[in-house]
Image (tube, rainbow, N blue to C red):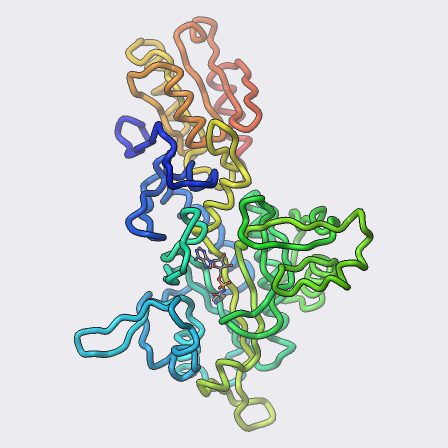
Length: 445
Ligand code: P5A
C-alpha cells in the first residue's frame, strides 16, 4: 500500500477521553473511531489487524477439528424464553421489537440459537462429537463501556459450542479448547494464563478464563508465579488424543491461578510465599462446561447406544477478538506508539523514502516495494512529500515491526537501513540483503 493512497487519519493530539494506552493509540493511529458509547467503526488499519486475528483464530480452531459457520446477530426472544435467560439477562440485553411486534434481541452470546439448530438437525449419537463455532459481532449493553474496544457494547467474539454424548466426551472438548486457545494466544505473541473463574450468566461451575497480565486489566487475579513460566511452544498435539489433551490441561491448570470471583485465600496461602502474586489481568477468553443446562431446557436430545433419548452434554468457548486488539497493544507499546508482534502486524514492512522526488531514491523505493509485494510481505510505502521526522513518527505510531529507510546518500554507497521497531536497532545493508532478511523473519508466520 502507498500511504498517499491509503486512509490513515492519525491524530497529533492525545484524545482526552482515552485513559489507557491501547485506547489512546488506537485512536491516534487511526485504527478506530467511536460511533457512540462502546460502539466503534474499524478504520482500515484497525480492520486489517482484526482480520488477521480472525484468521489465526480460524486456523487454530480448524486444526482442533472445530467447524466454522455463521449465525446472525439478531435473534428471536422466544428461544431465550425457553432457556429462561430472556428474563435473567437483565439490562445487558438489547431488546428490539420488529414491525410485527415480535420480540427480538441483539445476541450477547449464542447458546440458545446453536442448541435450536442442533436439536432440529441431529437425532443420533452417531453424529457426535460435534463442535461448531463462528466469529460474529455481539452486543452487551454494558453499564460502563470503557477503555475503547476493551469493554465495548458491540464487540467481536469467536464463540464455539460442543455437543457430546457423555460428560467425559464434553470434558475432552473442553480440554481441546484449552489447548487450541493456548496455541492461538501464543501465535499472537501473547501470554494468556488460564485461571479458574465463575460461570456467570453462561452457567456451569467448571470454567477457566484466559488472562493477559496488565496493570490496566479489569480483573483482579491471584496466582502462583510458576504459571507465568509455562509455554505451549511448537510441540505437536493430537487433538483426538484424550490423554494428551488432559495432560496439557493438568500442566497449565494444576498450579494456583484464580480470578477474584473464585479466589480462595486458604488455598492461596498454601503456595510458597515468594511465589504468591496478586495482579490485574485482561480477560481475552473463557471456556465453559455446563453439561445439560441448555439441552435439558430446550430438549436437545439424541438417541443413545443403549436405546432411548439422552440430553447432550455441552460447553461453550469464547475468544474476545476485538478486545484482543486492545490487549495486544497494552502488552506491546512504548512512548512512540504501537509495536506489533510480527504475527499480527497490519503491515509487515514499512518503506520510508527520505527524499521523495529524488530519482534514485524513488526508483529504489519502487523496486523494493514491488519485490516486497511479490514476496507477500505487505509493505506500507510512505511516499508522501514530508520530512523524514514525520515519516518515522508515523511508522513508529502505527507499529510496523520493520522499517526500510531509503535515501540518496545511502544509495550512493549501495545501502539502505533496516530498523527494528521493537529494539530500535538499525543496520545498513544492500536493498537485496534487507529484502532477504525480512523474508526470513516472516517465513512461517
Ligand atoms: C463463551 C462463548 C461467553 O459468552 N458464550 C459463547 C460464552 N463467554 S464470555 O466470557 O462472556 O465472553 C467471551 C469473551 O468475550 C470477550 N468479551 C468482551 N469483549 C469486549 N467487550 C465486551 N463488553 C466483552 N464482553 C466479553 C471477553 O474476552 C470474553 O472472555
